[in-house]
Length: 109
Image (cartoon, rainbow, N blue to C red; front, side, top):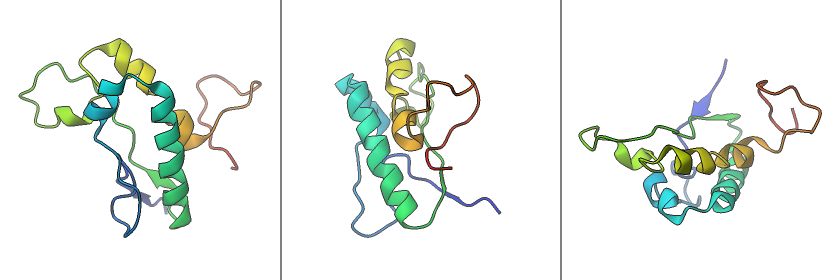
């Protein structure tokens, strides 16, 4: 059985966990390193509760505010969204240099 949790901006279902701003707020920082560090912190808290998978990140490019979840997009600029996907490295770990491009990677697995 695969069990996951919705930890899109922190492990918000756990008392005492760190809650981070929504993606739209993180995108406004234009700081991919911050996104990576947030991903790493979220991964530690999620793994500490025994959950191996999170439904994150949302890498949508919201260009129409009529979509009610625009706050889940880092930006309407695809280049900013692409840069902020550094959060994936934080969530999964840094793939080794010899890993096959396009193959899933999870540090420690």
